[in-house]
Length: 293
Image (tube, rainbow, N blue to C red; front, side, top):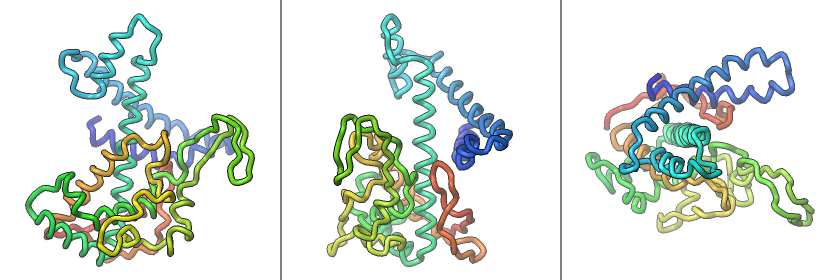
């Protein structure tokens, strides 16, 4: 299995997770889980092979990535009780692959979908790219500070359809009273960030895709740190990959729209924005036509 196939398998896993909850409530559906878990095991075997190859060629004089650094720490603590183990290393790399591929690609897919569905927004993106970097120079991270409109488009895309509507589970570390409600220690907490980012109190016409809500009168970014804007979660357990994710989203989006104009294939018109369920909510299935600019 090559890397492209691995990413496809990971995406398939996310697609299939919408049915996993049924296993606990509808016993007869368990006959279908063989294929689902076979897919997961395929991914795990590939990742374990990649880690194993890195381990076989490990040289502590040349630490070039997180696997090398982990192996260096693991080999230096063989005689001690430690969390640095081969099993945990495999799990770490699996987490990085999953969190660093599907969520980024899904967010990018939603951004492209919304941009193509709004030709005026695509026109504004092309104009900003042409004005700031032109049609030939590759974009770089330093361009972000001068391309507020594209940043606003990405923010609005994440607000409208965040990768996961419910944050990962939390728990209270002590008894607490919140807005008059007593919550005892060790209470299981789920935060509905979808609700926060669709709250009319903070976002007028919340179902409308409008990047302008993130721009002030001087066309500079605003509301970036709004308390109801939490696509990467909040607090100490917020997504550790937030900054690299923002950079990747910006560079890929600008690179695509610098060279191409996109349209829905065969004149297709999106009428249903509910998306496809899974661990993450994916945009409706559609095809695009790309025209060289």
